[in-house]
Image 1 (spheres, rainbow, N blue to C red):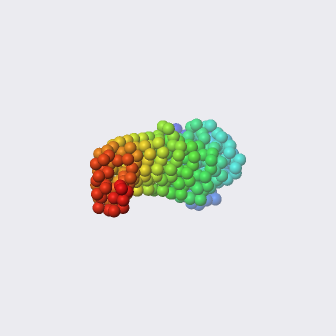
Image 2: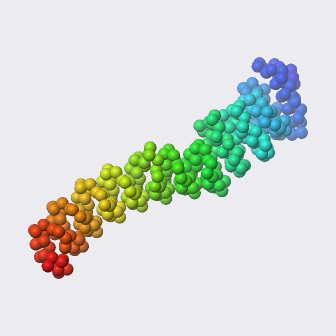
Image 3: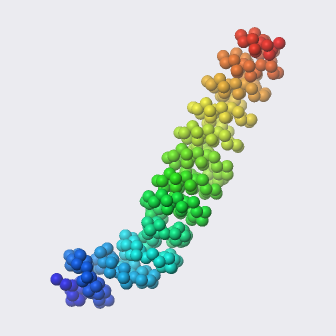
Length: 344
């Protein structure tokens, strides 16, 4: 049974203008049997009263929404949700239309999110996406379209751009694709917030990139270095150990690192707190004790300890220099002739 003007008027809250528009849609739909069936079965009138519009009506609307003004008008009139707006956008491939639409200051939050999703799914020129994300009224969840995309080629090209707004950078820094995160991590002048995202990245290669950055933002450098100095990956900790100007607290942390390569790097540093020197002087690895034994101006008690160290290299490292008399006597009777020879 066909919908009539009388049927529609009987529904509360249905303006005459809406009635006429629905009848026009019904008339145009005669060429589409499936659409006619849906209109008959689905309570179209109730849908309109609730402020929505069935997705299946979109093929008809696509023909009438030819310019930006009418596009905005339809969205507002029916309070179209994001998924419905996305369907409308799929037919709009004209650059001029997209340019004008992005520049409109009366886009709803759902329209902005639908537009972001459309630009990514249709692989539109990154220029449009960047312009969209430069808006002051950008919804906080607009970046979901980026996060949910699996289009590696498009996202790689996007990530390589140097003119990305901070919201796009943030979304790409947390993306599931490793190569996308890597491209962003390698960028210069990243904000402290983005740097902190990468310090907890699941891939050690990403955290390594951050550990190697020379000019970390002042507002996060202490926190970032502290986190990476305790990283689960020894290569990351090793990279941090090689940095200049480490704080004494970080040096103490690394001096007790479980990996001897990290401790070796710390032992070789020119300036070390005395407590760190003492910690390393009793290290279980003889190579590290040897490095410490070779330092200048060691406390005498450490020198005496090194003179009886079980490792030849460690004892050899202190022999021949200026030593207390009792240490000289100890080394002069060393079981290894090479050390005794140095004391003659």
